[in-house]
Image (tube, rainbow, N blue to C red; front, side, top):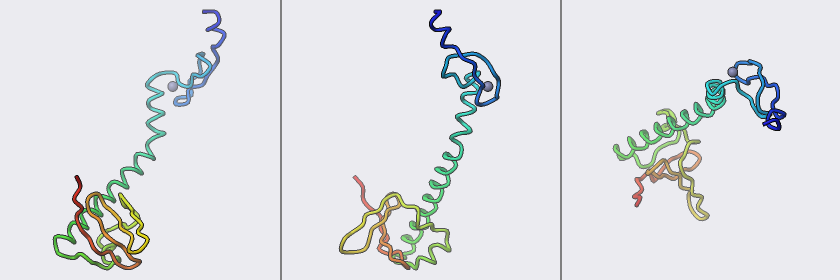
Length: 125
Ligand SMILES: [Zn+2]
């Protein structure tokens, strides 16, 4: 027990700044402060993930709309006007001899610098 006490050191809570004594690696005064601090640390990353998922969902709806209207080949600028964000994909398959294939969940499409084409639903097992 005496050995353990030797390890006690002053600390300052990373969340609220309260000072106290604790184990050498102690950083928080309470579980609440620990949780609060970790929540603030992960918020930007959570928001970023949520924005990307939203953009992917919108891309998916736009591509699905194209298929429903029979627009299997479409100008990239027209798609972008509808809110399509070409930088967000769920898969990318570079093909050596032929157009690169991109995926948005179960929809795949080919893309050149100015067009999105061969939009189709993939059958997944
Ligand atoms: Zn605290």
